[in-house]
Amino acid sequence: MKRLLPILLVSMITSCASNETADSKDVKQSEIYQNYTVSWIKGRGYASASFRFGGINGTTLHLTSPSKVTYNDQQLTESKFLFGGAFYEGDQRGYSIKHEFQFTDADGKVYSNNINFEDVEFMNAPADVSKEENLVLEVTRPILGNEGIVLAAESDTSSSNEVQIGNDSQASAYYDLKAQRLIIKPTFFLNFSDVPAKIWLLKEDKKKPIDQPTNLDGEFKFTFQSKDISVTRVGKDTQAKGNKPGDKI
Image (cartoon, rainbow, N blue to C red; front, side, top):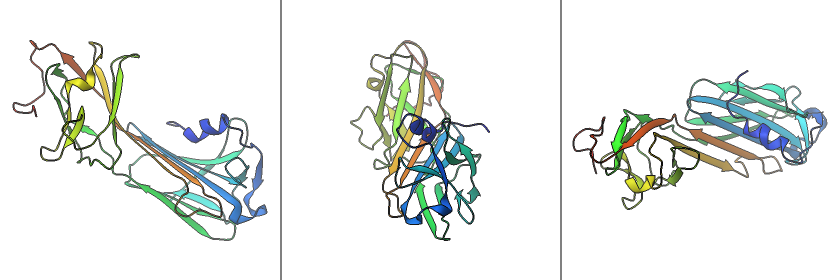
């Protein structure tokens, strides 16, 4: 099975969590710690869940019937961490605004936990833009200042920047609600190299405690990264391609 970025797997390998495994039917159900991860990266998705007895570093659990876990109604399959211990995973082919895990414990009690996020991607991006001009980008939906979406860019390993997107026109990058465009000012690219800049959008969210925990808090991590675009910033005497007349704001 192809995996995008099993964040949960990486974090567990580098932590002091137990890698022993027990059957979920043999432990107190109210002391099961739920841990969920969703990663949607460049158009492909991955979901994982793990369950531990006694807390985040406790013994991992193999879900015994009637226990099960689903993500958006798709039952996840059991896998093993690199150094032992059970978790559940599944690749995702279609994006859904609602990201919902349902965990049924050995007593038949169902816990539902979700994070909602509408995906956002670039559209009709220009191939280049003048260094003196705003880079004006279309996206698939409006971006509101309270969403916590980050604009990130890099031109090489030493030239990069990121900023949270709001609706304030004084910022180096912002979403113009009236024009319905994402505006990136030349100052955002200060100290960038004269090579194509890779640009993407990033949303990260975390719930701890989760909405429907057992007696233990639980944790839910969500990551969305848009598909990249590449834009070359050109000198002031070079005509930028792809922008329509009047696009500068």
